[in-house]
Amino acid sequence: MTRTLPRRPTPTRPSIDTHPAAIAPRVQPSLERRHLWERRYRRRLAATDSLGVVLAAVAAVMFETGGALHPAALAEPARIGIFVICAWMALLVLARTREPGVLGAGSTEYKRIGHATGFAFGILSTIFIVAQLPGLRAQLIIALPSGLVALVFSRWLWRKWLIHERERGECVSRVIVAGARVDVEYVIEKLVHDPHHGYLVIGATTTDGVSDPIDIGGRHYPVIGPMKFTAVYGREAGADTIVVAGTPDDDRDFVRRLGWELEGTAAELVLCNRLTDVAGPRLSLRPLDGLPLVQVKIPEFEGGIHAMKRGMDVVFSLLAMVPIVLVTPLIALAIKLDSRGPVLFHQLRVGRDGRQFWMTKFRTMVVDAEERRDELSARNEGSGPLFKVRRDPRVTRVGAVLRRFSIDELPQFLNVLRGDMSIVGPRPPLPTEVTTYDGTVYRRLYLKPGITGLWQISGRSDLSWDESVRMDLRYVENWSIATDLMIMWRTAKVMVVPKGAY
Image (cartoon, helix red, strand yellow):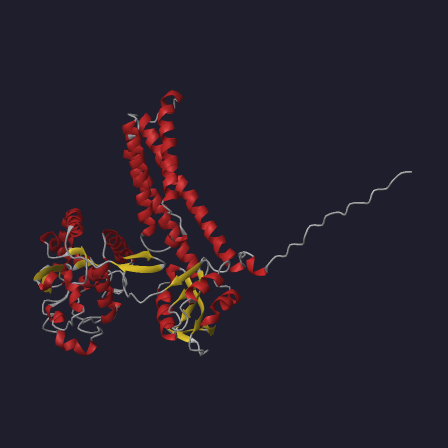
């Protein structure tokens, strides 16, 4: 008789429940849309960066071999060229030259390209010197400058394309601004002032509970709800950036909680402060036991950086004097044939520390222009102490052309060489203007006045007095060598396509 053993019960796996609160946030359509255009743009940058670096390295190889295509002659230079290409491209990645936050506006992108290029060739030079390897000279002479120019030029072309796309509403960050209504209005006004930065404001949330839209420059921005529901409204509206213009007084943890709620929905949470006209290089974040401290560097008005500025002024002025000397006889002849009087016009202006000097320009008005000024006082279109008349009858025919293209200011390079002015700086004021200054506006005189400046590239005579002062003060407190070079470049563009010059 066969004995049947009892069947052992089959062990059952205990059921595992998933707690909803523990599920990691998933990427929402708004964030994926933002990542999509950023990835496409970075791939395009990577392609043109690679092309520029490769062409520069190949040009250096051809220079090294004298154009010979024999394999034996090409072998060693080609290996060095490949080494240079790999190191250069790696440094462009490590220096974060394609980071979304630096693309489209500002000089940071170009600075990082310059730093990456310098580091790449610095490291390569060190390796070749230590290992006593020959063959890098051609890459230093040919590839470095030509490749750097190619990189900057291609990035500039892509930036122009990106700006055009942003003007069409593409490749932009869809923004909701949160905070007290007065702070929200201030932030929206700054965001929409320059569309090149790529912020498209789609709405706002406020602390006052009032749903009336916010009017900025005749355009209405809807208030879509109270501030405490910012994350919910941002998700519903498809925003990928939230700008916090101010936090509620009764909620210290608002920003931290908002950051948690935006995970998977937005790419950026931007905290705005009212450090008006303080440029990025003067700001640094210093964490202190969980307390983020924003440090603001106090500007200095003497020292090594100002010596570098003076050196740059002298070098650029000497280079500029060559074409100026060549065209001056033609300009002088045109001025003489058009109206009687001297070719040059000298006017007393106020420079650094309130010191007066004689500024030199090509004459653009009739000789009795100062005596006729009172006749035009009723037509004055300038604000504050500025005197401007759009169609000034005192301006000669040749003078109108010289003013339109800023040619009348070329003799000011002599003032730069004498040390009275700088190439870039605040607008040189008249003594009568200075007598109207208050304690704040006097800060314009902390630096030498410039032939060009932020006012020159931002509208010139179209600017109001307050805007002109604000730009000059911002330059005085935040200037840098990179800023000066950027202003020079943009001034050249303004001279070709004048705006606000009369």
